[in-house]
Length: 478
Ligand SMILES: *[C@@H]1O[C@H](CO)[C@@H](O)[C@H](O)[C@H]1NC(C)=O
Ligand SMILES: *[C@@H]1O[C@H](CO)[C@@H](O)[C@H](O)[C@H]1NC(C)=O
Ligand SMILES: *[C@@H]1O[C@H](CO)[C@@H](O)[C@H](O)[C@H]1NC(C)=O
Ligand SMILES: *[C@@H]1O[C@H](CO)[C@@H](O)[C@H](O)[C@H]1NC(C)=O
Image 1 (cartoon, rainbow, N blue to C red):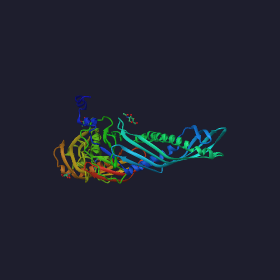
Image 2 (tube, protein in one colour):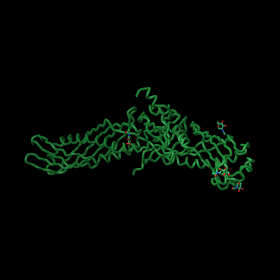
Image 3 (spheres, rainbow, N blue to C red):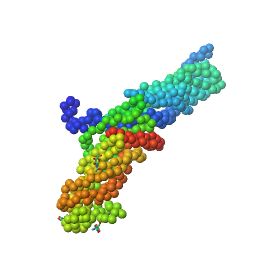
Image 4 (cartoon, rainbow, N blue to C red):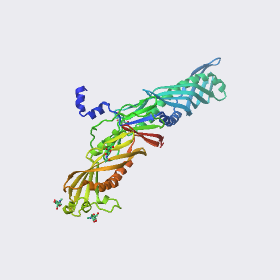
């Protein structure tokens, strides 16, 4: 595509950034060496089981024994009794990916032998010990066209430096004379097989598991979160960093976000297994999506007023502040419609998370035939701070409201002193709106985690433009 047609196709700048991949991530997942070590432990247990199920084909051939002559041998029913991987480690290879090195692995193999030597035909069983097995393999992480993580193995190398075979049986001593032939064939056979098992285990187990990362997580009837990878994961000397889009989108109609993510500079912390850098962009796309979908609307009627408040939401109550109301609409129930005229904008700094939402409050009288008559429109602004927590793999939060400021935007009932409404509106916002909002925020939004992962030992810190969540990980086997 030419530059001109690309520019035309892009249209909106935000969309252009998304297409060219120049955008900063909305969420960064950082896996530290501690996290890699944990994942490695789980993977090695699986690999050990798969290696123990390795199928080896029969071996046959001829060997010459000095002073005796040519022996024809057949080795069959080879069966691995065990494969142990006691020493292994995973390391970061900056710019490349990960490297797994396994040393001093050992295995035991049983099998049957059959020998033809001159006029002797003999058979029996044998036991073989394989020791000092070294395996080295690189793991390369990337992402596919849909932003799903991918993993593949490369440069696999297996070296076995010790194989010992013992033939048992009447003439065992004789056959043990050509053990080196068997051992070297066996070593080659096993060396070629181990890397096949490693590659297939990565393909069969690791890749499908990584792809359980929900790159698009539906969260409710309105929105989803896009957690697709915006670039292949990068390995540095300290960690594996995965940049995710981290963006809310409308399920009904996805549109380009009219602002872009700020850069995130994660601190070099490494005592937790995993860190999530959650940009203010993530939260602001939530606000943008819910506001655009018309979901930031909340209606208060008399039935929502908590017990214990000794008043009703009606024109009699309000006529204490707006005397003319009683004459215009005597003793009629009222309704308040709270809505966000624009998406709430949240900022994150070292002191925490704060937002200054603007809430429109439209008051109505409800006529006997249920029609609504608009009375007045107020604007409520205030400083809101948020507390953030992580619960069952979700970022959850709750808002705390500071002092609120009320102003009149429009009145259909003549003038009145807005200041007088301050305390009653405080009750509506702090005792009705806020608990409802916090109940939703308390359920949280899912973090990008593959299946069966539990987080513990949570840490929450604030930095310029992002929230840092640290955690240790526990994998729950099925
Ligand atoms: C990426 O991988 C997922 C899961 O395997 C698959 O559904 C999707 O089609 C892949 N996307 C591309 C472009 O290959
Ligand atoms: C309106 O509110 C006042 C005081 O809160 C209450 O005494 C009155 O019964 C209410 N009227 C209706 C129709 O609910
Ligand atoms: C309800 O009553 C008001 C005033 O009596 C009237 O103007 C309005 O048209 C009525 N609405 C409906 C839907 O009947
Ligand atoms: C909110 O905070 C800003 C800056 O800290 C301050 O100027 C403003 O007066 C505060 N608003 C209210 C309603 O307290």
